[in-house]
Image 1 (cartoon, rainbow, N blue to C red):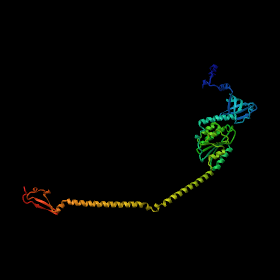
Image 2 (image 1 turned 180 degrees about the vertical axis):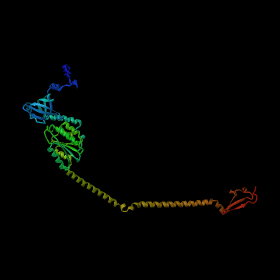
Image 3 (image 1 turned 45 degrees about the vertical axis):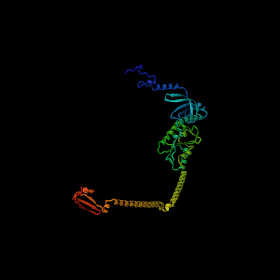
Image 4 (image 1 turned 90 degrees about the vertical axis):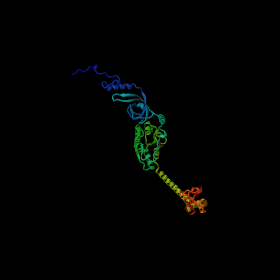
Length: 419
């Protein structure tokens, strides 16, 4: 057999976690020892949470402390004497603050708290914390009325998030169906108090919000103490409701109960019964309203017809409607008068122009060469048409043309013209 390596030949164990490698890792026992050493150096501290499990033994009580905001918890051990020193009995779901020393159990690899004292969180403390949360969410605009959506007049499907077999569910469903019998519900029964309430209610709201058939979501729960209604003031649930696209109705507790969900939801119902009345219209009231509107429309139509009939009668009884030609009588008279006037003026003008033409004709005739010829005068002209105006213009034996009043004839010059 080959000789075993000397202990000095083995790789050295790193002193720090940052120095570990795949070739030089820490063994589990060393890591556990390091964690035990680190945790032991931690000082005792106060931690707040919600008790989700509680078991009592002879000398020790074992409980699970859960963070109400997230799904995270730690095991806690406390002596029975310290538990009995509380002013009241501890029950599951209670909010407490614990003074404890963190401890690590290397065999099981678990971290737990070794409690020294445990105190309930008072109602005053809870309310003070809710006021702080309320102010912070209001500053972010989650309560702003401008972001709230109106409820549909008649939803196709109503989503209902409520407790299992709860009176709140019956109040919402029965009152809604009493008003509108055909309303349909998509119901999600969840825990409405205790450590699982926030997660289950938020998941149900998200699931219904993702259903396109759901037009409105109702989150309903009956009355209870401040501690029992705390899940509906939880920041995780409030932000889940604020992120929903579907309108959400908050119907938590009685009218005096006002969890923060009432401020984030789009509509607050004072009770689950009120929520059933808000999400659907009243069929009887709508029927009466439709009947009243129908009667009102009938009266309005009858009044309009009567007014139009009176107007038509008034038009028909006018003189122009009894004798349609009466409207044209004055115009006809005016046209006839204008026609006669125009004819008279035209006749007078024609007469004047006729007389003027006769006068001009007489003047023309008096000045015409024909008139001179008619008085016995004649016009003598050369063969080329030149009028003879002087005796010296003619030649002996020249043939001349003589024009008289009725016709013309030729003459020949006899003799010698004078010199």
